[in-house]
Each structure stands twice: as C-alpha cells, then as structure tokens.
Amino acid sequence: MKKYRVYADTSVFGGCFDDEFSNESLKFFSLVREGIFSLIISPVLYAELLKAPIEVQNLFKTIPTDLIEEIEFSDEIITLRDEYLKSGILTMKSKSDAEHIASATIANADFVVSWNFKHIVHFDKINGYQAVNILNGYKPINIYAPFQVI
Image (cartoon, rainbow, N blue to C red; front, side, top):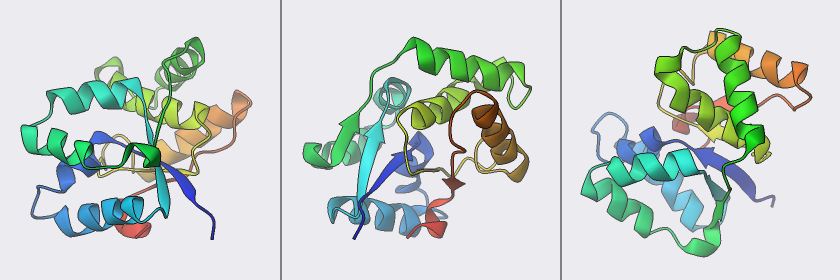
C-alpha cells in the first residue's frame, strides 16, 4: 500500500480539540501513527504550532519523528506564495495560508488537509492554486478536508 505524503495545516491539529472537528482530526492522526500517511511539516506550520494552545503543541509531540518530514523554507516557496497573492487567490492578510499551499506544492505532497474552508478548502481557492501551480511549472495540488481522506 502506498504511503501518502500529506501536508496538514494547523487547523487539523487544533481540530482535535474542537467538538465539531475532533473525530475526523483524531482519526487522521491515528492514520499518521499507523504509517498510512507521512506528515510534511514546514516552517510556517511549525511557527503556528508554537503559538497554539499547549494541548495542540503536546499533540504534535506525540507523533513519532520518523513519520514527520520537515521541509526547509526556501526562495522557491516565497516565489510561489507570492504568485498566489499576486493572482488574487488570497490577500496579504492570509499570507500564511498561501505559504502552507506553496510549501506543500514545493515539497511535492500528495495532498493537503485543512479545516480552513475560507482560504484553503474552497472550490474557488483550490482552482486558483491549481492554475497558478500549472502556470509556474508545478503539478496541481489536491486539497481536502480531513473527513475526505480518512
């Protein structure tokens, strides 16, 4: 069975402690621990986790390090992030969301999971990210809510 390389944004971690999203978020991380998914972590995700409530930080610490792939911040991520912003998919106010998608794209993630239905898991935004990726020589990025991948 293929092991999927998945970029989960901060909302999935926090979702474990939200009544509306906890079942699916916890199931997602159990699939990570079972080795179905390998988790991609970027500097923007790590920075957001450091600002998150302690229970979210502690959840992150429970994931075995051999199931985590850390990617480095790069000029390539900045360039693609800025292309998303220039294209109008997101505004500067949502720069970190654009950086999540750019990081996942540059890391060649199989897909992104998020509970952010305004800036990430939204049909117009997904189409925009995919179009910008194609125009810049990257593959289209698949983006799902956790309930779609568990």
